[in-house]
Length: 217
View 1 (cartoon, one colour):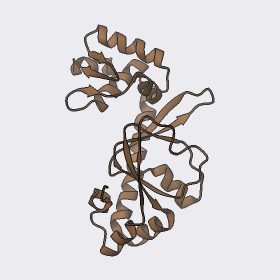
View 2 (cartoon, one colour):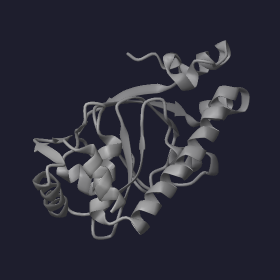
View 3 (cartoon, helix red, strand yellow):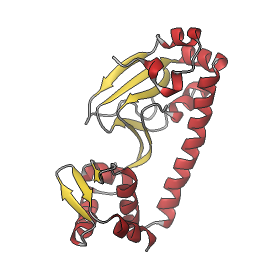
View 4 (cartoon, helix red, strand yellow):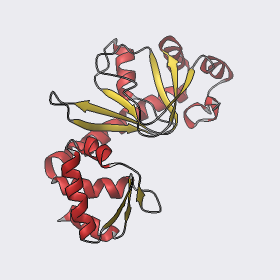
């Protein structure tokens, strides 16, 4: 079991704060799986990712998904914090991108930690400011980039250090807010141009400079 106090947001808690943290409920979420939070749900606490990754997304009336932001290890869900502090229903959907360990800190416990622990105040403010920049970046891409440019950007931003992007075409389609068929066509064009190499559930970057050129075109 992951010890929460070893995670960056909680390392500097006081002894009393760490005792409060023991009231958190830690659970493992398999992937792929259905939504673990859905629009209109009441929020009972603050969610922190200990391992893996969560995707927060919107869903159009026609069923098309579009990624709003990701929650990586050590990060918290800002929408959940906003719902918790303002007594609002959750405004989006959340699912695990990979096998993920999530800690739920009950609402009253998190409010007490926020009131007394500078480390919790700091991570909350940082999470809010980070989300603003991420959402602005996504909006900028939607309004100024063509779909093939957004795809090239996604590949470069989310590929590993070895140049491998482990996302299915359906996951990429959900992230970009389009269909798998469109993504398959665009990936095929990138592969034909020698920019990527495709495989089952993943692709490898063959020409990073060429992908950057697609974005700049």
